[in-house]
Image (cartoon, rainbow, N blue to C red):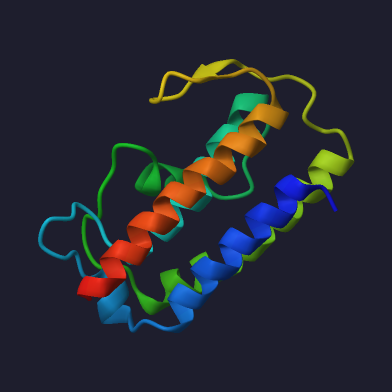
Length: 151
């Protein structure tokens, strides 16, 4: 297996454990000093992956545009999520990684629109996007580990 997918699957397994070990109330709580919560960070990883990998490749994302809009960069929680939405996010954590891996193996990522990240690094192709996505999800996993101490 390509190491980039091994890393992403490992990150997603950590995020699944967070879902499994926290109540709906804990997932929705925004602790003092934070601008978002556990569930927003987890869903944001999915939303960002879809933008970085699919949208910038000119392809239709696996998740809905509404999901992407709700959790994209620059957003914050606008209310509590339901258990049904948590359940959807749980499924998407696995299915989106599996589909990206299948699509990558099938060479569907032919074109890529260069994108300058907020860190000043420019993504030039899907390989760079996959690596950057793991870095991005790692950052949010760190934020999640901080938030869970306060919920």
